Image (cartoon, rainbow, N blue to C red; front, side, top):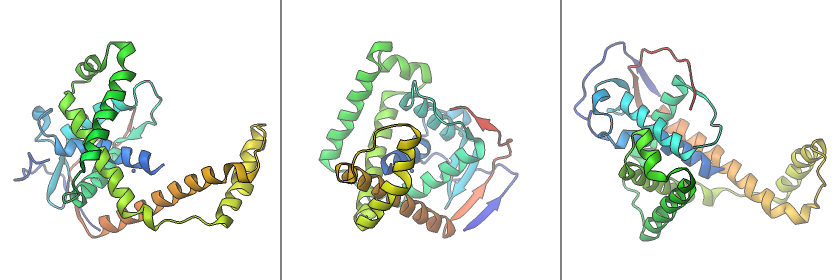
Length: 241
């Protein structure tokens, strides 16, 4: 991986262009969605954070991603991230966005987008509705819809590119049951179900873990073959999401 660090802000001709495996994908697209939207934070668009294969990532992209996360994790205690961790996720997301350029959505996924949007409307109905929350965070519904489309594309990409090649053996299921599940349940003083009743669920868990591992390895390979430049000079303190 070629990494270049710079203390100078430069202007780039592409300045205005713009990882369960499901939760991994959500984490991925939350951050790099900002790199595709360039119209919500024009006042900050010249503040560069990094560049990935010639495509810049800006402070406005980071702000947009944080606001999206505020909506999608509203009412939940999201893990605090440092600025450096957020920037690394931005870089990973831009790398994946470049991989997704030729990965189009099917009509069925458009229906999933509307279903997802409606679920958010229903979830926020009791606190004034989704429009109120969007206004509070400075987002437009069109930005949220674009993000949901991206989320769906990433999930489909993971399903197509990685999941078919992941397998789980009976031995692995038994080992998970004996070495991981039984100690947890005993410590929590929960009745232990027989293996045959929960083997299918264990298989799902192991399949998701393996998919995430393969995805992480793939991202490392993509990073090694990419040109990544850093322009950020701010302290990398923790950020409360």
